[in-house]
Image 1 (cartoon, rainbow over the protein chains, first blue to last red):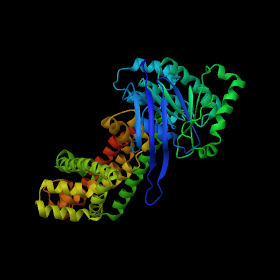
Image 2 (cartoon, rainbow over the protein chains, first blue to last red):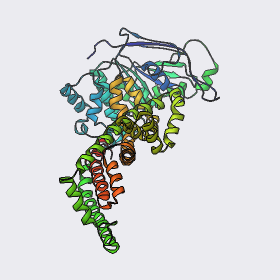
Image 3 (cartoon, rainbow over the protein chains, first blue to last red):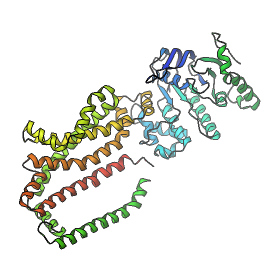
Image 4 (cartoon, one colour):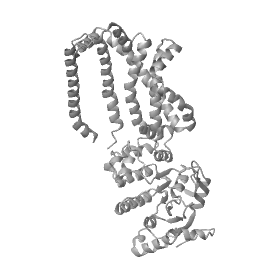
Length: 260
Length: 256
């Protein structure tokens, strides 16, 4: 396991989606600056359509068509485990085969079995994805991302459309996995409860074109956030920003207001 | 999961197939009996001729000659057609450049292609195989282009973000998505290609089932004509049941 993880500094001047056949171009991100410290669990939240997924794709190197820079320190080309909004498993490969495919070489089956067991997929290892429940498919996607021992985990609303209990179990699993396998995490969600439960720091993006509207570090240990009063206080603080993005947009002061 | 389904379906479909074949033979035999003519031989007579020519005659030789042509033309058409189809789906320039050629070939009768190639290249094996390949090629191109256009971008992004590399992405992410289209192209291809092969042989080859059919036509030997055709149908069905269907089951076993 990598003991040194990776820090990220993102400076995106502009990201546009070119309109096809006369349609207008859309600016997805504009003047977005953010830094993420090594091993930090950073949650990105904001209204839908504000460019959260675009930001992850840019950091993942999937989208290179933007004006700006993304720097990784101290590892210039970190191993990236990406958990997409949909599991994106190959339907013609079993869970085990899906994970084995992303590993650089074969013959690591003992390690893989241990990971599958830890993630609760031991019984589903030889099942094709079409037979998996939503929760199991997401576990498989999680296992695939962790299998490569990533320096950086990118997670794009990975627990969306699961029922509350299943999503809660998977959040617990994610935190356990991250605690034994240090990695920097960028976690996109529009669920403020999820953000408060998971984050070391929350970045709130503005409505499109997205930029960082506010950041909110949470220093309380995660176990203490479970206390209902503390939890609702944190959530209320966060929603002050997240729920009024339009009002905030007009006051265009340079730095990000800090909360907390 | 699939195996249970197979076990349940197989006896039914086998019995159904046998009944269908039997009723066909019965109708044939009855018609032959009513017609009572040398030009409409019964199933028994044709079957006897088939066995006789397979053991003592040159049926197997002619069958082998045609099969070899079909196999080579099929492999060429599938390989080139797949490559061109994918290239056309991926590049607008290549698509524009080759599209009118594909439309032309698609609408050019196999007979015309065969005659032209025999004129230009002489009555050669290359002309024969070329004509069969060119007749089949555009359909493969069109089918594979359609398949390559539906490739899932999300899976491509997944492969890229996990740095699978070109070959692994092609082999494990792209090809499985094209498999259904490849199977459709193979299926229709096999049925089409051997019929074209017979025409091409009839026009300009000294062996093969097509050549034999021409000889039997001139001799009015309907018994052999049907026997030779049936022998080839049997081979094509054997390929369908023995190769294509198991292959399809293997490629689609992950489906529910």
